[in-house]
Amino acid sequence: MSTLIKVYGFHLDVFEHVNNARYLEFLEQARWDWIEQHLDFDWFKRNGLALVVANININYRLPASLGDELLIDCNIAEVGVKSGVLSQKIVRKKDGALISDALITFVLVDINTKKALTLTEQLREKLEYVRQSS
Image 1: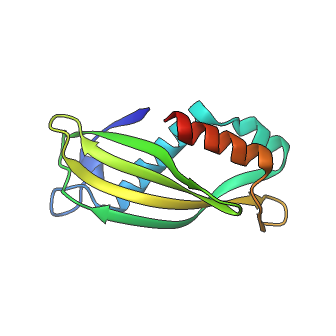
Image 2: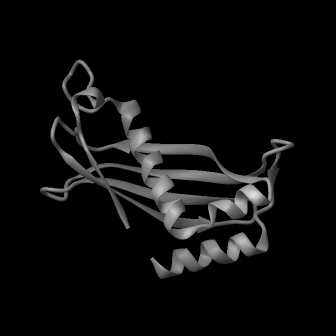
Image 3: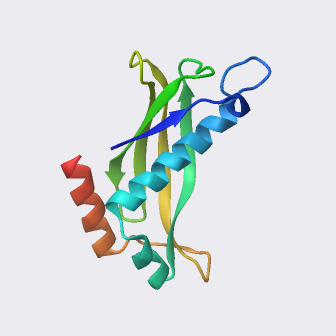
């Protein structure tokens, strides 16, 4: 599954390319789309849990410009006991050029205590299933 984002003027900086901070927003939008497709968001709410980003390692490969259409992919790279890693890539639709790639580490958090938890067995199984079927 890919999220399509078109670059508009408000995404650009004074150098007329997408500002580096905007890529984080693009990646987040794709993660929300991915969550809606693969996970039960209501299950997290019912159980007082949330997936929270703990670390982002992003590489900016090429600039994106006004009018570019970008495809953002999101895949599970790793499922651990206390965290997982998502791999995301942003490519320009017209030529397939890699614009950016990132590894996003996430943890499961109790929304009341704000403490990180061990990933539940149910969640690990679901994440592994999604990872293997991608």
